[in-house]
Image (tube, rainbow, N blue to C red; front, top):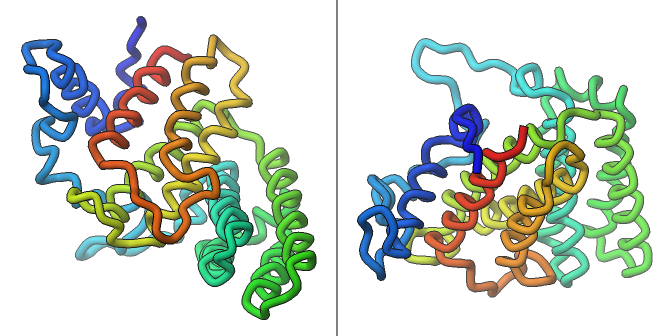
Length: 265
């Protein structure tokens, strides 16, 4: 297997460390059977420190920069689509309030400087507003479904028009997925932040879809690992009452995805 260092850099050293710990858990590289992936150096101590990438204020003396000016249009489109994915799953699972919240987040994350770029690529924010109103106003199920379907179709058009490298998009989404899961699920395997936990699901599904568009090399193993990642949530999505996958299990799967990404150019 040909491991490409730049892939590890983009995925973050955390994935590399977890991958090494995963080998130790199997008794490889000097490890003993029974160790978990979270025994990687700093694993338990650093797990809860993972905030969602791209969020937060500038440091002291640093002027905050509009995030919309920093992210490529394909990544911004993928972020919005991820929120829509979560909203649609929760709405269809009978959780309209949480679904509406994610639609509000989808619009709220769009900075003024970035909206025009998205609209140029076909984004219609009014469709999200209409779907959110239907969910918040207890509209009939048929009407809600029609509004959600319209938003999903618009997201598909937006991402198709935004283009981008699907492999780079998977890397971007996996960073956000891991960081959202770290922020949403405690090391003791409890959901501390439901919104972040739900967002991690959206990023995972979006990464899986992006991987399906990879045409260079043999992406079948990557696609399989991403499918296994998505299966860590219930078929209905990140629904209320779900018992999350243990962080060690989740991060081990992330490391396997990192290994497959490292073989693709």
